[in-house]
Length: 247
Image (cartoon, rainbow, N blue to C red; front, side, top):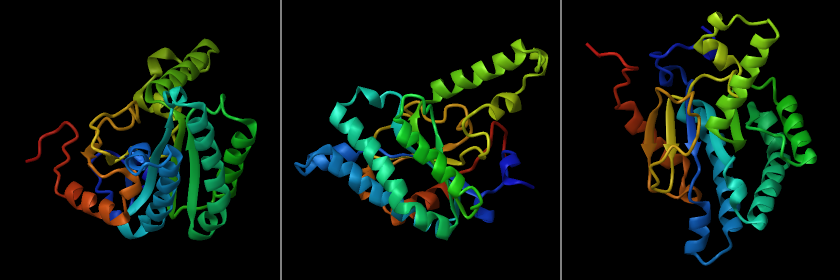
C-alpha cells in the first residue's frame, strides 16, 4: 500500500512511516531570556531543525512537517520578518547538499505569493533538486495558515465546478484533500507544540483531525532528538480510536 493512501488505523511507527508535525515555538522567548535579540533564538532553532531531520530515520519518522512562519507572523517587526526570510534562504543553501545526499525530500507549503521572488525561486529549486529522495520527507510551512489553505483549496474546487470539470455532488473529502498543499503527504499521526503553549494556532486544521497532540514546555531551541524520542515513547502508549471503540 502506498503511504500516501494509508487509511486511519494503520500503525505508522511499525513501518517507520510516522508523520510528525511540529509547531516550533519559543525561539524569541529563549533568546529574550538570555538578553539576546530574538533572531539569535531563530538561528539556534534552525540548528535544532538540522539535528532533528538527521535523527528522523533513527526515530522512525519518515514525514516531518514544521511550522516555520504563519500567515499571522507578518505582524512581527520588519527586522524579525526580514531576518526570518533570510534565515530560510540560508538554511536551504547550507543544507541542500546534505539533504540530497541523505535522501531528504524538501517541500514548502503555504501561500508563496507575498514572498520575495528570489526566495520563491529557491523554494522551487530545492523541491526539484530533492524530488527523487524518499528517506525523509521534510515539509516546511512558510506563510501558512490552516484556514487560508482550506480557503485556497475551496476556491480551486469551485473553479473546477464552475468550468464544468467537476460535479458538485461528487465532491468528497478526497476531492478537497487533493487540492490541499499537503496532497502528496499522509495525515499527521502526531502534532507536537513546544514552549508550553496549548493552542493549535491554525496549523494543519484539516489534516490533523485525528492526530494526537502533545504539548511540551521545552522551548524549541532546547528541543533535541532525545526530547522527541521521549515524546514518541509517550505517543506509543496512547490508544488511537479514530472515532471508534476499541474492543
